[in-house]
Amino acid sequence: MKKKKLVSILIIIIFFIIAIPVLCQIFILNQNGNSLLPNKEKLRESDYVHAYCNGKEEFILPDKTRVDCLTETHACEFDWAKKWYEGFGQALWYAYNTNKKPCLVLILKSNKDYIYYNRAKILCDKYGINLVEIKAKDYKE
Image (cartoon, rainbow, N blue to C red; front, side, top):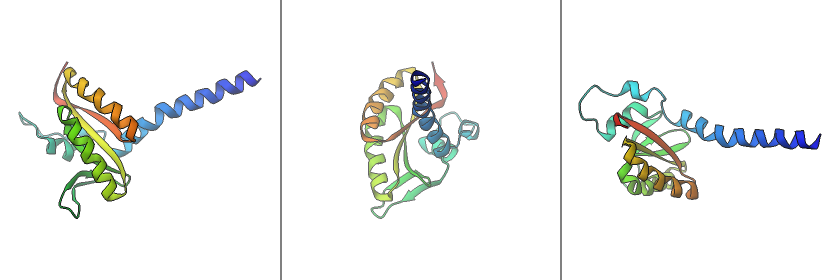
């Protein structure tokens, strides 16, 4: 009987470890963002912000810096994966100034960008930053 109860508790814990980050991502970003991207050859970071932001875009802070996407719960910085280190700092700064949770959204252009994503993941996990990946419209395997 105790074994069954322990197994049930472990299943619930594992479910929440997996489900909570997924649910957070759903509520932070517009999940239909890829379909909202403009049809043009070269997309900019701002195109992704406009398509995926589920909040206020370009929220200006008192120091004149701009939060890419401010939701009810998160201050999100969008950046290309290779610029993860800049986005990491910006996400922390924006969260501090808005009293929201920090969020870093990395736009990946190809499989090679996972080297940057994995670096960001280490620090985001350590400092409690929600890390979200978006595959670019012209993503290359």
